[in-house]
Image (tube, rainbow, N blue to C red; front, side):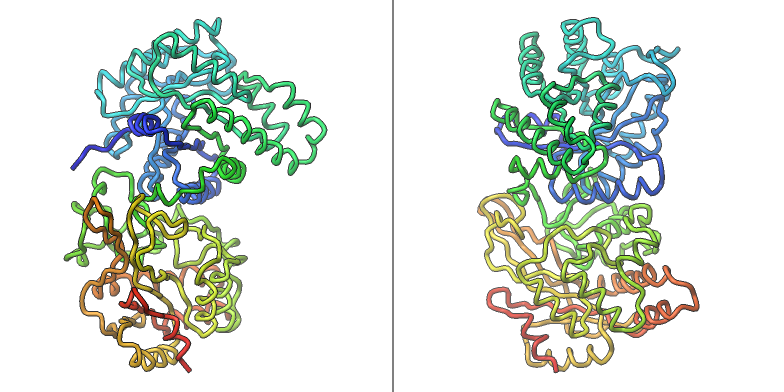
Length: 585
């Protein structure tokens, strides 16, 4: 197995190839709800393929447990390479070493080493007994005790660090950090592209050769940006102050201006040879995503996707390339249920069906983005089966972004064949998972592409759904006229029905310079494991209501009596899976 690269190595390779990339910074929220919201934001950002994310570290390790947990979960469940901040503030060497040991133990491979700010309530920074005075000391410690296991980043200050006596002295401190073993620099935020460009030139003049990433933040609030700049002693150019002053009380206009200003600044950076940009997001995505879209970063996301699903950033799963399609939209659950595996399928599925861990409703519960109140608001309070169906119709139409049977937000817009799925749902087949037929689709396709340039994607049409016993009977009767369509289904209790007896490949990609990749499969034994989970997920909806309520009675009745089934059209060249449903009377 090849060794996983550090972020700095990936950055260097991309710059060498003159490819643009971006990264994102988050901070640990103060409340459990804030943590849920941050995980939802991470989920959304993962779909646009940042190269990595940062997670900050509270003074004195005040957020150490949460920061480490956020980093672990971002790599494990969202497939985001993560750079964990580590500061000297109020941190004895033993505490720092424990943090580094824990990072290595759980597969975190990148740290951003900082001196850190003074603890809350203190104006000046002081070295503690048994701690380090400078980030360069922390860099030396990491290299001495952990060699080159970690990628080590440090901070750079285009306007000098607030405590540095001069700009020149601050550059010498930065050079000391790099000489101590740092292999990447991320800068403090700034609002003038020339500040960064001059800073980068000055760094190169004194022999700093490692990658330097500019840190930027779209302005989202007049008051907030002033407070942040006061805190980190960042200058706001006069032209920005003059532009914001007339609109400071109109937040929508401030946000619009912030996106425009950040976009223009980043364009200037890119025009002058900058390939990577680091975004300080304040745990929100809209403004940063708008800037990324303006810069063209979102145009070829598919070229950065290795597979049609995100693989965890864990050494043990580096070679994983095959999954049952049933968990396509419940990747966190799949990862949780398979985290104890010592080997993951690569190339073919084989006999992995007996290895799944137990499914519990609280699997990755802390990562669930919806509260009880928001579930009720999104999914409704069904007084009839028709109301239940309407929730699935709303999802198929793109009116709601999350359903109990997915642990990820729906980020794609309603397009291509989605309207046909709406018709299926209106017939009473409550679609929870689907894939379209693809026949030699270029791997560069914006909607369905993956795996990089030069390949072709093939896919058998696949639809998974809940339906009433009556509709299941109608479906199985209609299937007799469609010999290329295979099926399997079952109630919550009882044996499966169908004509699938072995593993069927659903998706595969072909490139001229590598082996065929088959990332999605179905397997009859795996379906029996999946159905237990799928039926249990109805509880996520009916648990919102009281025991005696009509809503709970209806939803429990659906969970106890309906079938879960799926159909696969093996004719990926000319098949029409929708014709099956049109034929049902």
